[in-house]
Length: 501
Image (cartoon, rainbow, N blue to C red; front, side, top):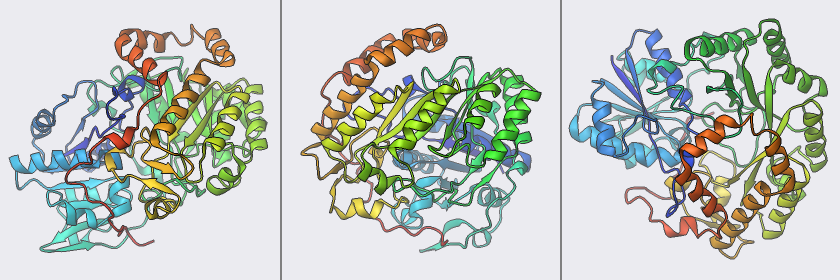
């Protein structure tokens, strides 16, 4: 069976403002590239269409033409919550052109909500819940839907949720993602600006699941059962990207790259014994990384490590990021710098319980750390996260359930401590300007101008968009989500019916 896998573009910006997402970073959709390689390995010709790719058209109708030109027998969408309605719109156009074309949707939104999505959207035939390799291969091989675990399907007028299948335990059985199927890779894709030194870059995910439970995180796809690729597999994967595509920098996007420290120690030693001439970035956990491991990461080619902090208010941290203290954050950043690595802090603005005072503490703390970079996302409630029920209940704030805006750049949730979303935007933009204009950041940035030459060249090539971004974050912003009309077909208040645990 011929399969075409699609990465919908979704809604990636603030209503009324320019879309900076593709300017700042255009990442390869590794999930569907992995599924494409898996299907090809089992004899099913597979095409990949990235609606955010450098060669993709912008109009939905033109996207459909591209998809149909691959002559698919099955179309699969990998859709996050913000991209789900875009997938639905594409699916409706595909069905209008080819009513008999089966369409399946997977990824976090489908996995967290389950059967109610098929009830709401008749153009969708199947949902793939959890890991996609098994159910997608069964569909491609023509197996009866009733016999495919992890599948939600239509039995005439009845929506059926099949039982769970065992998780994939040995991830080394999976082939390398089919990067060659991605038009414009790697030159048309780029990592977050100023996060790399060498061109070209790519992303890798070397584990599934996370052993920790943060209040804001959706774990319905890979869940908490932690599994990982071996150091030998990761080294071979990096070598494959270097030799075939000229990639020289990797961003490891594991939820927690160093969760199994023995694995990372072995990988670093392998990179020292068999050097590839590649750099990489990764995510560590505050307070759970030794000086020795940080030094080894540096020697193996690591440039920057990211640390999930979320807030600097002790009450907020206890509520949303258990086990992390301000003291451990500061100590870890000092150790990172002592090892010669860059430190990037990851924070969330607008979680339940946030107030202007708690955010001011976070902003002050961020500047006191002398971070090399930081990422401050706006809280987006997700259906599969522990916080979802609290947000929709409305007891601690106001929530606009607009799936397209659940992209971490819109203030869809307004904590009770804020008078308005406009107030939230003003504080958020003020902090962005405060951090990037601070003396410490400008000093560190200035010392690395030559290292940042490729990022600077990228910005110069897109100077009008760059200036628009600077103007936006220097302004007071607007009400964001409050000025946008929800998709006319999107339901509100669906009760999740995911797979049983």
